[in-house]
Length: 332
Length: 288
Image (cartoon, rainbow over the protein chains, first blue to last red):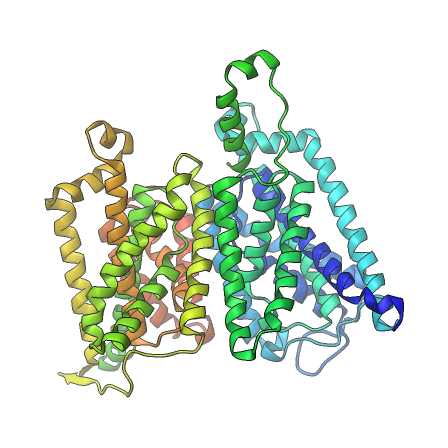
């Protein structure tokens, strides 16, 4: 056995962490910075996956495609289309409180799944799109995985650095101001609906990018590969557990949640087959419970958002108050 | 004309009254506690499967299991509130919405672990529709309509005549004022959960009775029920009923113009139109 094959599983795990890291940063822009409740993360993920698949795959009978474009074009296309989809949704829903956005994004995710399932000319319906190229996919399996990990890690790093720069810039401060006190921000002359739309589109584009990265890893995509509840939920728990509003926090959340989720599968796969299926749902139950526990005991997440410190004196006097207020701000 | 009634209007009304039962619960929670409750669909699934458990364990007919399931789910809903939502009340409401999303996942996986993922039904065999002057009605459709009407009338009487019903309406209109007038918020919240949970179980039960029982059925009606509640106007019981019927009938009629696969998206279309043109809904409800 070569040394490189020992790494197969950790590398596979790490690639997925990078993909989910991308999703988590996207959601962090929406929820952490702008306070927008996107419950259709899987929908934007799916749009990205299918766009990149159609753009880069070779020609096939009976469906749109055959553009054979290079990998980076697929990624850019995925981001553009996901952002484009976010625009009208944001236009309609961002005037209201986030509950409305949540229900509409659930509808969007369901709609995209229906399109993927029934439009044969576009997505080849249930059979899906296959033979999607992967950069350096001709290498032997283990090496190709390692190279792909490098690519996804690099993309995640670039996304992280860019978003982090935005977050510490005046733009990030403005977004937090809008999130924490909408009317005050408006009174300061900030264009609240436009800025929210900006954050919503930017986050959605990153989710589309993650979808494209996934599809070039799997090299095939079917409607069943996109479980709307599961993907959306995993990303949410990553953001909340890690610490919404803190990019490093959500990346940490992505690592923790994905390692738990993925390695627990190894354990449940050892069970006899009649229990293995049930164990899958049991794992989902535990993930739901994990969210409740985080909300109960550490709503600000493992790495809370760093807020600018208040002056010392005031802090000592109203310590209890400032702590509760800070928690309120973070999760608002 | 008769075939229009038989194939589109009647199924639409039956489906619509199922949505209406769910939408009343959503609109109550939305108006009294001020958050969207995303576990509502999966709570309906849970209620439907509880009814199934009663029928198989006690060997009674599903219609006797219904009131038991309604009661059990109502109490269960209070339990969910105490365990997962109560401590979030002082936080921004949207946090509770997130928690309800988690509860939805937990409820669904619970159903999947206990009852599996295969479809089942309350009773085997096909019921033959009865013919009433050319209008063909199946007996369970008739029961659905009658029970839905009875529940709505009972709820209306409760909200307008009973002290606690009035307290619920007061809290929906102005929670601070209600609190000052001596309304016990915790009791009102518990009562709301009993009502919402019970109606939710009824909607799940009738969905299972008219189609079949499966673990994802509740999640699938979440969007139409929300659309119905928002179309009617948040906080408006009569709005939720009208909204439910409109969404149900529109869904059945939509197959005349769009491919059948996209039938479920008509509720989504209605939701978008309402948010665009009349966010307060038909009956001028709240906008959060």
